[in-house]
Image 1 (tube, rainbow, N blue to C red):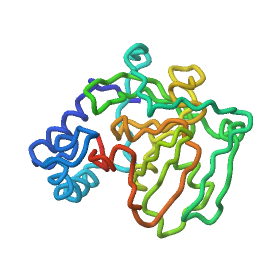
Image 2 (image 1 turned 90 degrees about the horizontal axis):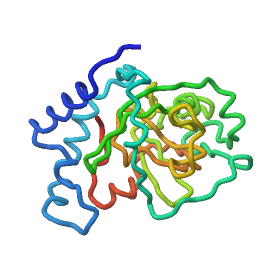
Image 3 (image 1 turned 45 degrees about the vertical axis):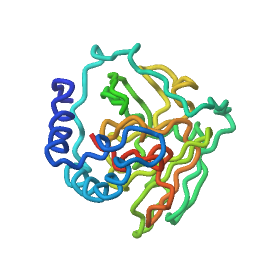
Image 4 (image 1 turned 30 degrees about the horizontal axis):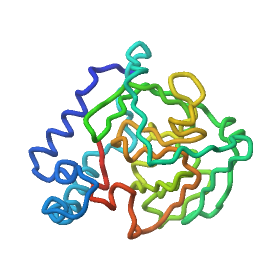
Length: 239
C-alpha cells in the first residue's frame, strides 16, 4: 500500500477543473431554487461530466493513508432529516434492474464475502474533510453476483430514509468503491449509515449514500438523478 500526502491527487484534479472553468460544484452549492448559476450548470454539466470521466482511472487505486492518520472526530454527521432504524438480522439488500440475476442478499451473506479495508479522505462539498477507515465489500463484487447486462451504464442507490443517488458504472466498479459496514475498525453506527453505506475516495460526500437498501442498474439516467443533484449540485462529483 502506497502512502502519499493527503491532498496531492485531490488538488490536482480540482485545480484542473478550476482551470477548465466548468466545475459544477463551483457553479451550484445551494439547495435553493433555480438561479443564474443553476442555468449555467445545466449548460456546463455535460462538459464537466465528460472531463471528469476522462480523469477517472477506473481500475487504479487511490493512494491511501496509514491507520495513524485517522481523524475520528472530524467526520461530521449530515442527515437527510430521518435516522431510520434497521434490523440487521432481517435486512436484505436488493440488487435489480439491468441484471440477469436480481437478488436480495442478507447482511450475514454480505459479511461472508471478502472484506476490504481502506483509510481514505472523506471530502464534503461544505468544505470539511476527514480521514476515515471504511471496511466492507467491494461494490463490484456485489454487482458481479447479479450479473449485469451489457446495456447497464448507471447504478442507482435507494436509502431507507428516502435519499437517492446515481453513479456511473465505471465509478461503481472502482476497486475502492465499497458498501461499508465498519468504520475505523468498529461496526458501523446507525448515524453513519448502518447497516450498509457507500464509501469511496473518488466521489464527494453527498454521493456516498447511507442506509442503502436497493441497488438498481439502468441503461439510462432517470429524470431524478440524485437528491442534491436535482436541486442543482453536480452529478459526477468526482475527486
